[in-house]
Image (tube, rainbow, N blue to C red):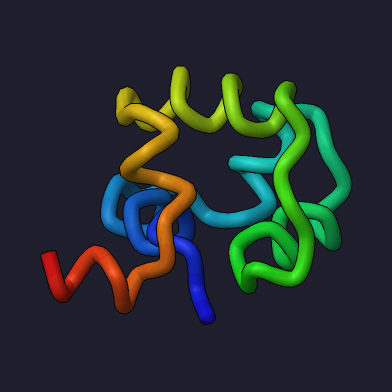
Length: 69
């Protein structure tokens, strides 16, 4: 289960190493959040939304669910 966060991040041209540096988190945390293994912290959620200019409801849904809508 991949979160839409990953798809939007890649589509906007942010490699993982650059994105985690902008947020200030460890790469493993981003990986776990994007794979749905861990819930994002408020900091990760707000910073990600700010960088990608998207609402949390869009970024933190499952990619498969987003395709069905």
